[in-house]
Length: 411
Image (cartoon, rainbow, N blue to C red; front, side, top):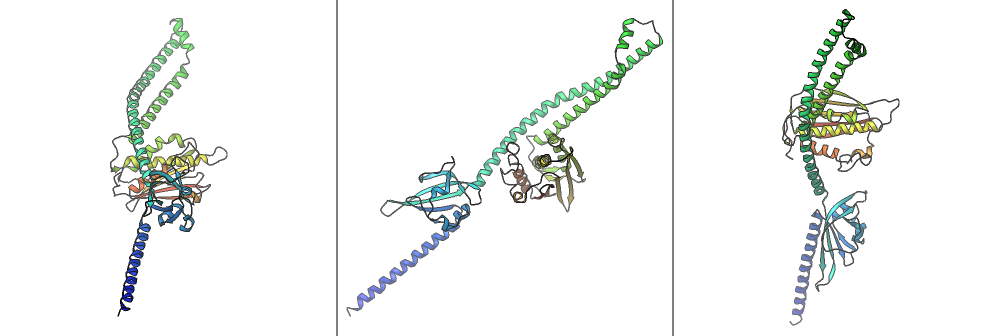
């Protein structure tokens, strides 16, 4: 009988150990599931900073496999926001940059915690890197929006200030046109008087009439007035376009005349294309569509400027001008806006990236890489889409499609 009890006790102990092992395995499996589900990239390191464990997000963020990351120093994966490689693990929170194998980088928020053994000694670190690219983009968009609002308010104020003197310059010019006409009639009458009564008028008057080139004045004075009136009209048109695009209080969705936006955008962008391209318009008559006129106008303006730059960059012979074509149409309750150019075109490998913030094919100082990113953002808010058809050496066609009856998201 006495030999049975140790056997029974040993069996019970083995069962207890098995249950503990099962629970431990379950906890490990649960921990692995948690790590796999987390959006943040997790790097578990030993005390020297060598990576021992990573999750799937860490692999996606770096483009490396878990086997490639494990054993690597965490210092080689992260770069401080200052651009320097960290020399030791800094416990706490900081911003850094992490590189991907495709050559791109991502800004990340890094939170580092210490792993301690049961005795309290430092056994390693848990480094959690969260991709903050979207947050940075939102911050950039907000800053740009604030700047644009300030510029818009300034432009609207300048437009208002210019409008007042332009009005009285125009009125005065029209008055001078009438006066010049009357003066020419008076001088002509005096000339006929001199011709009919030679020798009876003062010599000084006769000499003055002979000295002044009346034929030149009669031909050029009205033309000069006409050019001035046209210049005033042009300035007034530009001021009106500025007020249309930069009105600080206009940000709501409203019935919008897209063709009107195109015409105003052409006025604003004239300096970009008038020396390099001929613009052809094919604007279909259509009812107003529900849109944000300020944002949609900015989209059209950006597309026109990009088209003008593409045309200007293409080498041509014999002073040949390029072409930009703008068309609008309403197809199946969908607004279709097309801006096409015969410029340099976009290489296929870059087409997918042109809507990325800060990506640009232009030389430094000519483009910030924000124009097409804004186009995509605005069209997305209008529940539409942007289509690109481009071929190097032949040009680019940008097609905007948005629902004519829908309302954009508030932004």
